[in-house]
Image (cartoon, rainbow, N blue to C red; front, side):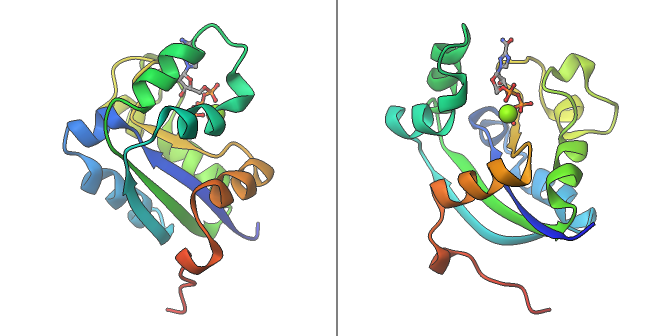
Length: 143
Ligand code: RTP
Ligand code: MG
């Protein structure tokens, strides 16, 4: 497994619940390093562009409405196998099916408001990281 980068979004429900620190703590405890981080209130255009792959799905409108309902925290996480590691920490898309101890099991109740996003492959990670961050905004961790 090699050192990878992945994009994480702490979604509006988790920001509203005031659990962003606990969620970042889980990434850090698992050995992922934050190399970029910012808070944003996504515009409709930003949310639609980000989730463009889902634009034909029945839930697309609700997803965009939710993602623009309040601020989010977008982060680039770096580490060995970061993409899969983050997906494991997040748990299943539907919190009711998420394994105990995962972020979605602990902080989310519904599939529509499920606390976090994480890139699902290194290819999506590259696209998603550059969707939110310029090269100058990413800070390589030297220690
Ligand atoms: P994400 O992209 O947010 O990390 O979530 P994911 O990979 O686990 O799930 P994905 O299939 O990419 O879906 C993106 C988001 O759309 C909402 N969704 N709703 N009602 C539904 O059946 C449904 N399916 C997906 C979820 O909020 C999901 O995170
Ligand atoms: Mg996805």
